[in-house]
Length: 202
Image (tube, rainbow, N blue to C red):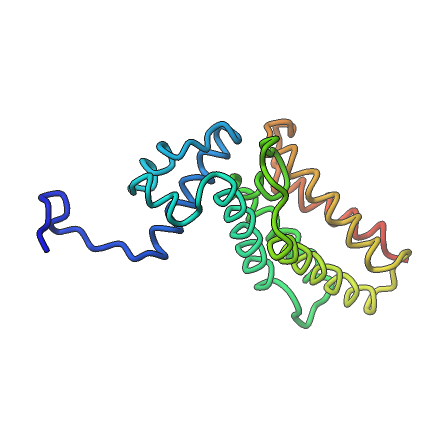
């Protein structure tokens, strides 16, 4: 097998690395430009691969969007699991919410595919992909339920989890779209989550 001058001294890229690089490139373009940024030629250039590689892994734009949605939920799940089911249920709720914000800021493109802007032609994510998102949320409800067993709440765990998530999610959508006030948004986010939690306690 021959190599080109460009190949010499370059470590070969394994398929999982190339797939992940392609997803990250697509997510970055989506964060900057929305669905219109998902041009295969531009994604390939940003990922350092051929357009054929994009089609090989994702079979076109619908498959790419599905993969972004699924990968986003995987990463969010991984980030939140590290903060859950400790000996302090109240801290678990708070830290799960903080992990949500950290994920959104670190991966805005994935976050927007999961929860925000969508191309009108973006097909509904598959049942398997949606199940991953539901699994993440069900685990958050369980985290809130454990907190409620320690500190009785004014409502059931499902309703309390929805109120807390809605607070954090709304703040993140405002922040990512540039509609949040100029302030210490980290502190404001934490304060809002704490205030919502205090309001849910009996």
